[in-house]
Length: 346
Image (cartoon, rainbow, N blue to C red):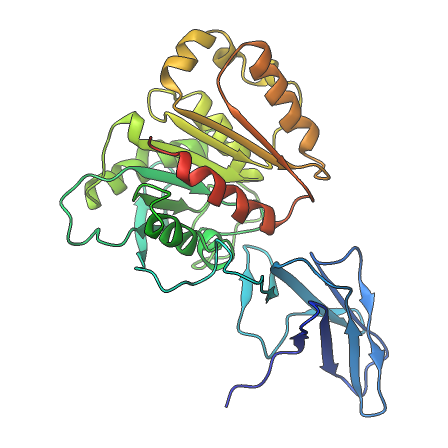
């Protein structure tokens, strides 16, 4: 029988963490549910405990630190794995199903495809979600290219973001068009699950863009029955991936007619950073079917998102600006995808 994870979610939505460490001097718990590391209290039985305040329904991450040594929950199989570290996860359930919950609806398939990136000269993988009914259909589907953040991998939008379940639920409810989601590794290196990253990162600023445009898109369009029309291609991402979606999408409006920037890693003045894009607002409006920008109000990247929104308003470029509460957290990015996906390919 599997061992019980070292946390318990109570009916009042508080969460108690426990860890047996009789010889430890200190035990702490950290995560995106609280500000700063929290001390656990040691009991006479050698079990340390800490109980949170009531939490809003969401999926959260956490790690323990035992005498300063960081570790994931050894009894919890829900792992948030990244390209440099990992954390454990837990969920506080809402009263009704959340957009990312597994529901009794038809489910799509998540494929893992390995490919040789000619532009980078390395082997990499992409995760691809195909919607329910794809295998039986001969239709050409639209594609969302969905990019992860700086600490994640190509698996992140599935294992952490639950993008596949979000789309399953939206499609079943008739709220989103059936589409493929293609999730590449966002760093221009060999796949992190195959080799240790080199000490020096790729220095070519266009390297990842080249991989997407020259390798990933042709590979997907050869392997899957998808549309090759710009109206049927979208690119979106969170944090680092949001910045990449802006850089690639805004400079390739003949390739992508929809762009999503979730808490995008974008600094400086938008009009200067995307000068060529702002040079012809009328042409932009003819091509862009959706330009979606979202960011939490307490996120350090919110000023950049607001600056982009204001610049777009100034130039009368059509877009959607969706500020939310909280900061730079996955619970926002799941919600942004659930909000944006129904607006795609209309």
